[in-house]
Image 1 (tube, rainbow, N blue to C red):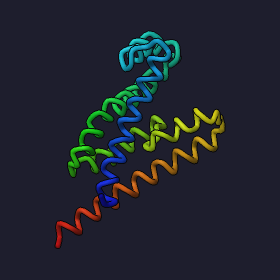
Image 2: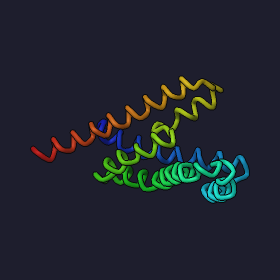
Image 3: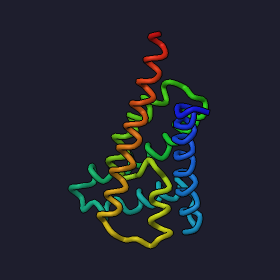
Length: 150
């Protein structure tokens, strides 16, 4: 198994792990994943947003919700090794930056297990995570283009 094959499976596994962590955390808090978040958001959006910021709060919630839902598609595309997975994952980066969700899903798990509560550690791992993903996706695109052009 070469590096290219490993990268496809690695990013697919990271998306599955992110979904599992989200679901387990929801269930541990006696919530139904996705549905409870939607109900809670609609019930509290007026209070949290303070009226004038309701649009912005709603937009951030929608972006985060779309990212979580897109992880199903992304994982499937990576496991199937579809070329569109690379472009799809690069488009997801916009949502990841807004929602502050690491692409390397075991970073937040590691922080939680170790009990680290430093903003700088979280920020550093987030930046490393996203740079690693973008670099590896560009690497996959470059490898794909070189093999097709020969």
